[in-house]
Amino acid sequence: MSTAELPFRWRSIALPALLPTLLFSIGEGAIIPMIPVVAGNLGATLAIAGLVAALLMVGELVGDIPSGWLVSRVGERPAMIGAALLSIIGLIICVLSPNPWALGFGIFLVGLATAVFALARHAFMTSFVPIAYRARALSTLGGTFRAGFFIGPFLTAGALHLTGDAASVFWIHIVACLAAAVMLLLLRDPSKSFGTVAEARGTTRAPLREGEALVEQEAHGLFRTIYENRGVLTKLGAGAALIGALRSSRAIILPLWAVSIGIGETNTALIIGIASGIDFALFYASGQIMDRFGRLWSAVPSMIGLGLGHLALAFTHDLPSTVVWFISAAMFMSLANGIGSGILMTLGADLADKSNPAPFLGAWRFTGDLGNALGPLLVAAITGVSIALAAGTMGVLGLVGAGILLRYVPRYAPHVPRDQR
Image (cartoon, rainbow, N blue to C red):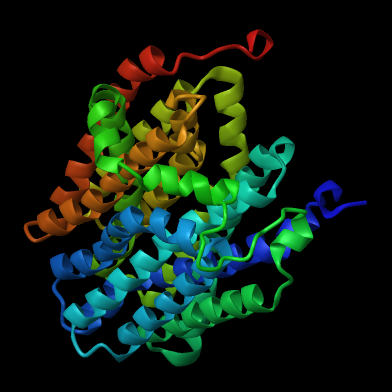
């Protein structure tokens, strides 16, 4: 039997793709709840702490632009290894930071690395998983990412209990990145494991694998593609950007809120970890809702829930039961976020040209990531006035986003029953 005819086995993607992704995601999930805390310990105000935390998403947005070009030039596995090493450099800067601005630079580098790693693992799965298994593999990949965000905060709580130093959590991500890089270096060449023939890259560039070609097409002419699709991107794309903004706002405002109401570092990590577990548990249910009832029934309830969760925080900051409200809002927003798991990727796939989807998918992903970056920046800016006002503003934007999705999802991505597909 030739390598091209080797049967696909799920365990064949576990070590080279899923386990490194899980490790990287555990590290990221460990540090996100503590970034505002570490910034505060270095003398940052609540608003500056929010800005430092937002630089992770800003780094991911900036990294989206060159990452497609990079992955298509060096290949998926080298790109993931390089991203892990860049992340380690950023994390060491975070550990040694004497002030919030140095910490912010380190966090920005981690964001850049995250963008490259995310796109490389997407290309990896596209290149090496047969099309008959691809949807399930990508869904599993998304679940692996959420699993990392569930596990990471519990490791954070353990590190805080042992060391008492919030900055120690960066070592969790350093170890995770090192483990992922070593695993990728030592593993067998995936072209042999998956039956894909990979030509050596010499002075003449070898043909791109499918995943490498995909990410190159996504990156090529990105802003021209955005202009050419400005109609749908300014309408339904605005809803996508607000989904990204509310999701990233949730990730930033919860640890900021915990700092502002005096919850301890270990308890903050535990609360966010439990909330992430709810989020993780619902990723498959979200897909079922979208397939059975339509995209609208996932997108709109998710946005309404995220909006109401932010509003609940806004009106309960100074109540005697503020800690109970914080825990309730964290769990509720995780429930809402879990219901919307995969909605952006699904809508992007629905809207893209079936004969050449990559350029639109790149523009769509950039639109969502633009919201990812702007949401935390808006939270940081308004927190300078009042964190309750920041939460309230994001809550209103969540309800506005639900209205946009309610109007434009049926127009651009109408539901087609399964038996008519």
